[in-house]
Amino acid sequence: MRLIGPDGSQLGIKALPEALTLARQVDLDLVEVAPMATPPVCRIMDYGKFRYEESQKAKESRKKTVHVSIKEVKFRPKIGKGDFDTKVRHMQDFLAEGHKVKVTLQFRGREMAHPELGSKILDAVLEQVGPAAKVETQARLEGRNMTMVLAPDKKPAPKKADKNSKGDTGDTSQSATIGSPAEPAAEPA
Image (cartoon, rainbow, N blue to C red; front, side):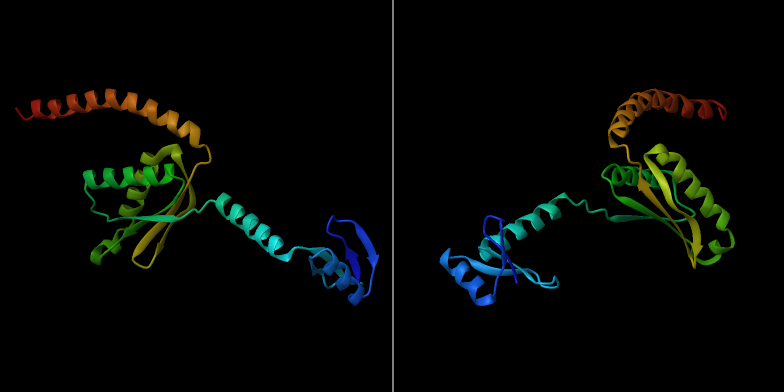
């Protein structure tokens, strides 16, 4: 077998008893590194320390992985404006956190006769979410549900800046919204 020393130096091709004797002299273990090679490669090392370092590397790599989960938001064709806005706001939060969002539109009974109502709602969802998300799976009808999957856009820093600017425009739109109900109230009077 080919033998590698504790410092990584090549010790040449040795017999098993001789390699074990060398490992015992330096009070270390003889570990087979590449059993499929010809001749097999063995290394003199502290096996306990080696296993510990490998587990530390594995732990570090697990820390660096990003877990993307899919959040599901369910709609109905006859959803009210307030409920719709709340669910869209939740979707925007999920997307900002980096989660994918599965938008499910549930049809019941006679609602199945009008799938165009469902596609209108999903279009409205896309319009409100805006550039914060991209469509990963287009809307499609599966049984009594119409589903669509949205993924967050890969530019998180500009999204925060957009939120601040949207907040500024939100103040002006609120004043416009306050003025809008007054106009319809004036019409019936």
